Image (cartoon, rainbow over all chains, first blue to last red; front, side, top):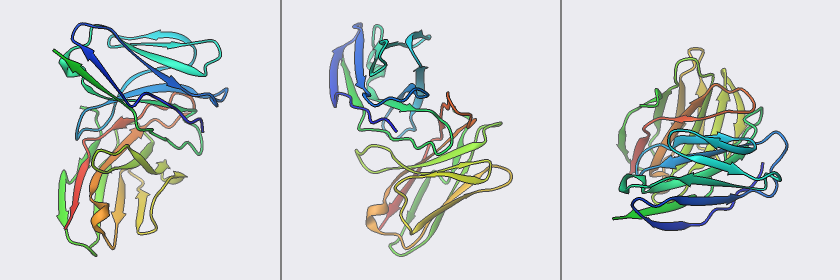
Length: 111
Length: 114
């Protein structure tokens, strides 16, 4: 199972674009990259998932370079309500799948 | 609302006691995961079930056990409770197919051991 490394914390201001990078040097061929968001005392919430290149949905974009050893979650025009912990996960979801949530990145959005 | 339900929402008990946490997955999901999150800590994976069978085991203590029933709901049993077991316990469910196994989390059960 690929280990992931993310910055422990980041600060931003409302209206800015935030990019959070996750390193996963040992990613396997079958692994997908998934990002979750967690607010205090709530369960994590799925944000976005990708395998390669770029994925975009209504809340975020995910950029994955060709070597797939890292990925970047991009949050456009953040607001105060985006203050949360963001987790990057790498795995294949198959048999024996074990989810290892790292420490995540604590994003603090200021007014 | 993720569609995953967990009961009870809060649980307060004493050291040495035993408790059972319950999880109902989203309709159609075959896989259930259990996690423990202590105060200001990350999520620790405990165990995963798929269609009634144990699929993966994480850092689950021997005092803890779980099962998934034929109707796919799952229970996590915690026994001989210690102060350090106080935490939020989350259940998540997914379809369980290899590849894009997105997990949907419940609201959690907050366990306080006094």
